[in-house]
Amino acid sequence: MSTVTLKNVMKIYPNAEDHKKPKKKGVEVEAQEKKVNLQITERGVVAVQQFNLDIKDKEFIVLVGPSGCGKSTTLRMIAGLEDITEGELYIGDKLMNDVAPKDRDIAMVFQNYALYPHMTVYENMAFALKLRKVSKEEIDKEVRRAAEILDITQYLNRKPKALSGGQRQRVAIGRAFVRNPQVMLMDEPLSNLDAKLRNQMRAEIIKLRSRINTTFIYVTHDQTEAMTLGDRIVIMKDGYIQQVGTPQEVFNHPHNLFVAGFIGTPRMNLFDAILVEEKGKYHIQLGGIEIPVSEDKQKALWANEVKTQSITLGVRPEHMRVCEKGEEGIEAVIDVNEMMGSSIHLHVTSLEQDVVMVVSTMEMSEKEVSALTTNGSKIKYTFPGKAMHLFDKENGVNLEER
Image (cartoon, rainbow, N blue to C red; front, top):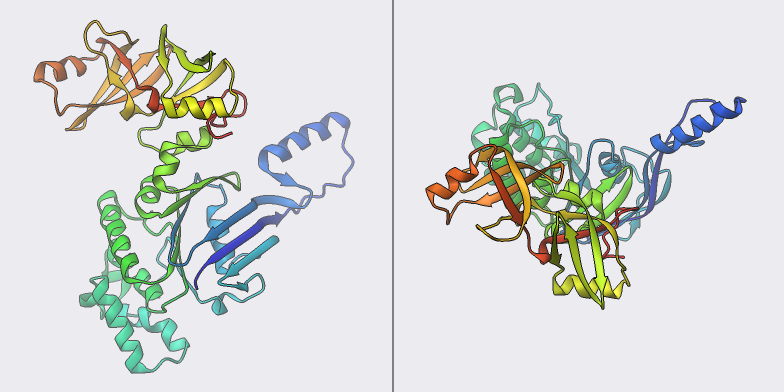
């Protein structure tokens, strides 16, 4: 069983500064404030904190978040390349905290490929098996099987410098694949590729995953990779897990403002609005209009005993709709339009802020499309109650999730 379990895992990099020097009162206060902001404690810099996660056998988990959130550090702790300061790591039912990397039965694919430049593709892929003293016949069988799956058989006699970035990445994946590891770790493996190659390699990884009976843990800062590859996504910020869920769950039900803003392209629009509760029914007041909250959200808000209050309202650009003539809506002025073929991305000024809308052109006439591609035009827009995300003004938590 290639399950992976992390229990209260924490990583602290020791701080070399001498914190015992006497400080003047004002200086000491300022230093403490900086410690909080930079996650610096008396013990050092905290990179990962209170990390709890159960990864199922053969599950594809993606750790995603902005640079410096602790995702690569977490991966390196699983690999054994970083010591765990506190907490426990299990692979299967075995505690791995003090087990050497070579004995963890894991394989890792790095961002920079990490291929041996003096070896051929075949030799690179065979190297780990040679160290295990696997027979030549078995090595040849495994290398050629992996090369066929990854469509790199024709490159087996080449050296890495004669390959493109995408081909090198396939070799790196193949080198990890031939080991038949319990757990496959991938640290931003596609970040060095151009957009077209990234799309191709995402498809290759999805195909590869269906052919390998192993557990994948994949790190990326690219939310598109996270949404397309992961069975579940772990969204991180400042060393903490913000939310764990399927791609659909984190998109439709973000736990807080950070997740809401991080997942989705273009990013979610956020408004200062008022949530009004009257006789057990809720509606939103925004831009001079009232929009009723959908029935499922009504139930969640009522269960959480949410009262009338100022909130942060989130609406995804693709859920916004341009009003028809004479229909009530929120006023806006078109600043920029981006024709994307089947849709138009409208950047408008509304309620004294920038708002982005994705408008489908599939059922529009040429005249209607022309009206939306004229900068400076005035329009009105609205959105359905089921498309609204309601966040606490103070702490940013989703009011439905509390």
